[in-house]
Image 1 (cartoon, helix red, strand yellow):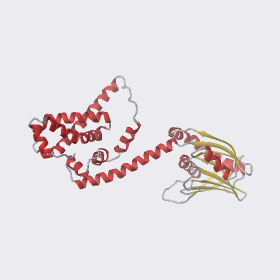
Image 2 (image 1 turned 135 degrees about the vertical axis):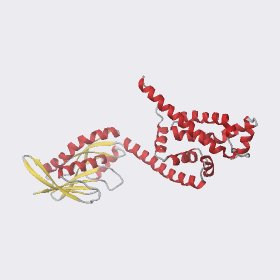
Image 3 (image 1 turned 180 degrees about the vertical axis):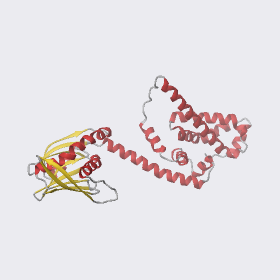
Length: 345
């Protein structure tokens, strides 16, 4: 914004007939007008149109400005009103379109969508301050002048907004990585001859093979299973029907006295592991993706008649299960990271 002449001087020159002075005001505040419009509309193209309309209105009404030194805040109010009117018109057009043929959707702009989603999480006053400072590059003092508030207030809003924006962007990145992470299906054989099958999250098939080999398994097959977030969600219910009983049934077939289901401790492979205690020796027999953990826990808790409570570290219940015509009972212990099912004689 900084030039040799202040706003008041430029306004006086415009009123005296200087087109060049108005051009300087446009250059000084065009990014600010665009930022305010984007804050309201969330669309780059619409924001550019609204910013242009803002300056047309400002030029036509400049003679009504009583205090030329307050031009910045006066322009802000025009920009805010113009963008709000554009948003109302857009809502009306969408309502009319809904009666007739639907409008063809524009090609999605992935980055723009991420920016909109992140900025939409910020409170109203914080969002416009962040856009003007963080996106358009104005100083705290310039933003304060434009918004008609104090520099201290702007500093606080920008600081809080930047922190929250970073958090939201980080969450989007994390979600994207989770959605696109690979799921590998594998079959292996343990030293004792037990068939080990399951699926696990990993960076590559080689990582899955190495993990299994390091644990003494003979790898039979590893293949990549491409799954989107939607696929995972659709798979959960089927997984619950399968894991809720198969884990126990298979454990009984293999002669397990304890079945242990545990979240990873962190780092490396991110799968939930299922292990059996057979004749005083632990055998890892299955791995399932971490997205199955919560519904699996709820499924087993329901079988055990336990109402899970977040504040409780360990909760106990019993699971009765019929296997080969005989009813067997497991004592179930539910923890934050480990579920333990112990066969009762």
